[in-house]
Image (cartoon, rainbow, N blue to C red; front, side, top):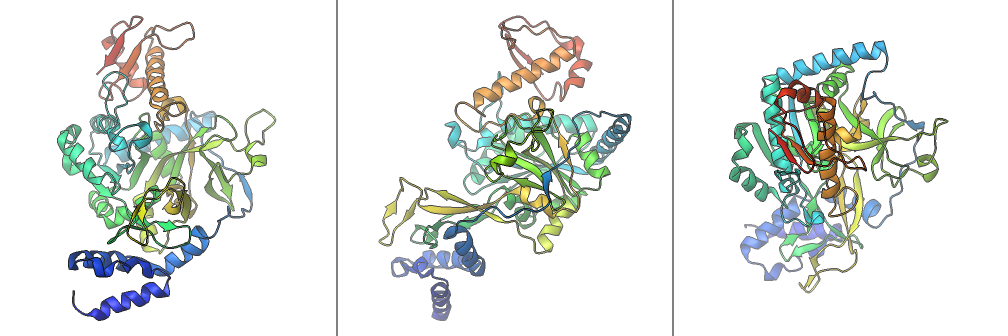
Length: 475
């Protein structure tokens, strides 16, 4: 590159911010690698980095002091009063119209790998359905196709990957012919990254010419939607609402007319679905009202005294758990990108591979550094209005996160089978059960057959008898 002065200015900049080690191997690099390293350094926001080092890396951030702190309120899964029944019917009608008129799209956060599941590859490619072993991606694609057919609309799908799995994800979709969807309606884009830090505040190097970086969290989708061109594509299509979920939940109900309709009727900008927590310290965020704003407080940040507080009827006071299912307005995403808003960063102490000052690779056995990430739920208090719809966990939430135990593939299989059994029994189909009342069969309902219990009931005459030990697949 021309002008040694540019390199000299970079050296001065790095020295000013105590990061001069980033070009410590400069004499050993060829021109191409030097140019690549300089490009990475120029992308760094050093004033912000100084602040992160002070408050998040060297510092030990404390949960912010909250004021006017109380549990958030929610809509119930079913209307309870005549007034609610009227509003829910109105919401379903409006939500149906919005979907049918192409005003809604799907947004999946799919940047994770299947490492914790013992699976090599993007988590979205993990096979999860009980009989046909359909992957998470395939289940969502088939659901989107069924929704599109039901409502006579194009329902675009936006998928955020990470540098860890972007190319793999693209290859998977191409190899599987986009699961039958029109590729023009599938927009796969990559989230941003943030530098990794040693505990001393110095940015780590992955190689002599590569800064160690990691994905910037699911909150990174706000900026990535704009930077990737996805937001512009949505605006061109006239999309107003995004139905957001994380890739590990095969029970998610996409394009839910009630949820979209309630959100739109109430003039909300970002809304959420919630479950009743299994216990005071279940590892989900807590929906609260802080200074009058819906806010998610992480389970680890909610004081035990509040987490364990009960009402006279025995229910938890802070009972609404966040499950990372949202409706987000596209103009709200645009506002966050143009109004200078940035979501707060959260600190995670991790084992981070890097090279040392001699250029030797280090594979740490203990946590040695800090990764920073943003969370999508931190956008909720920035919305002028936000609603919460409580849902039935067994109907819509069965995340697959772990190889064994809680939130494992085995647990998710069981919930998928139980939901299918409940749908069938509500339609009058006899499902064989064991003495412990669990289904004595393996069930799988393809999205093309039914998206909900009502559709199963409408196809009652197409369902054959189910016998003990059967593998029953309805498609």
